[in-house]
Length: 237
Image (cartoon, rainbow, N blue to C red; front, side, top):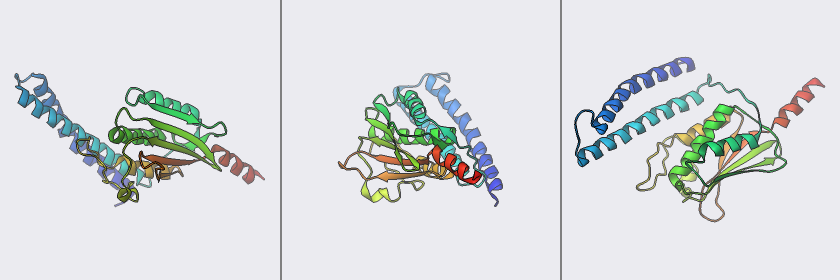
């Protein structure tokens, strides 16, 4: 099956799955709100659990579609020069209510980076959601940008429980989950999306081994805009 046909099939499948699921979710909301009659505490709790599972299904369907798009040759990105200071400040502002101890720091010599702004934002949203789930809303999370030659490197670090050694080598594979007992369950698709999306922008993502034995740190590498400027000058000569 060609990429375009596969993507069209996936979109059709997602639509056909989400349409009835949306109806189910609406009915559950009516039940929970008492629109179809009063519920006792046990019934309300059961309906609430079904609603949570429905939300999880919707999220998994959306994540599967996003991951499928990145693996298609038709996945389009529009890289532009981005100011890392402004970009990370925007990310911190958007996540301030959910991660109040989120900070950003950009070294003075960091140049603009080259990336698709929307795609890169989804990468950071996935990583911060990952931190919130595994480290908690009270976690200290830092976004630190530095220059490494022709690459802008951004570290996303938290002070949570970290990543078990046995999972590090496959942490970016789909369906690899690290959820602790009692924690919100994930599908392991967000990190897979991050790797595929960054690869489409000539970027990378790796896990940095913790020096203290605690916390998780992801290192994102993206081309510095100065590389494009130099290449353009070389082509003109």
